[in-house]
Amino acid sequence: MSTWKRDFGSGLIVLVPLIVLLLVIGWIYRHIASIPLISTLEPEWLLEPILPLYRVVIALVVFTTLVLAVGYFMRTTLGRIVETRIDESINHIPALRVVYNASKLAVETALSGTEDLQNPVHLETWKGIRMTAFKTGKKTRDGKLVLFMPTAPNITSGYVIEVEPERVTDTGESVEEAMTRILSAGFAESAHQVSVDGDLIDGMGEGSADAKAAGNADMTDAEAADADRTDPDTAP
Image (tube, rainbow, N blue to C red):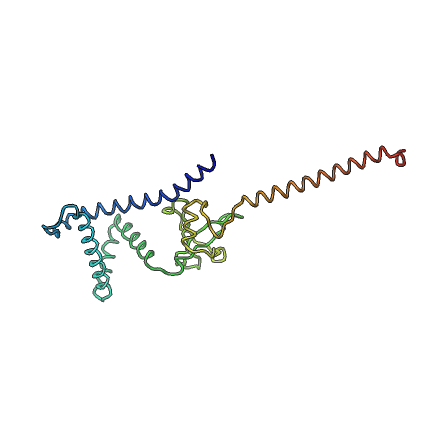
């Protein structure tokens, strides 16, 4: 019974991420292919079965060209002035400024590639208990580190905390290893984790040996007492 359960679980671990990935890719593909503006660029001679793929390719080409053009424009003085004016205008809108600033910060964080953002750490939240967090590359004015502590297994939520640098310990692992441990709720294999089965077996063995030794000692004492009672030389 345990064998087929283990095989079934291993199969789910392999197939479920692939299925989710294919569903996400299919969802993105369908939405890109259904963009109305792309249909104006379709040639009349194109076959009907190839239309969705053609629309996706054209959409990606147009988007990539637009990103490169805007990026080149932002390198100029006029581009930086325009970006500043856009930020100031949106920040005057109460509802939209939160979404705008959060999305902009998320993109900057994902594309920055700094070492601090790729550094998982351990933090002792309660005495004897430590949790995994990630450096954000930011500090408070009084010198505390700003960390993001995600929840497991849903890493889209978590806590932004400020702690003293001496309370933070580097894990010595990559961000992929730390993320894998969090997403798997601690069940994934990791170089920083060991199975407790061997420790439990060793502990049980040691406990059994100690119990046997104690039992032998007690039996020896009892046998000695019986020997004393039955020995005529020691009897009163």
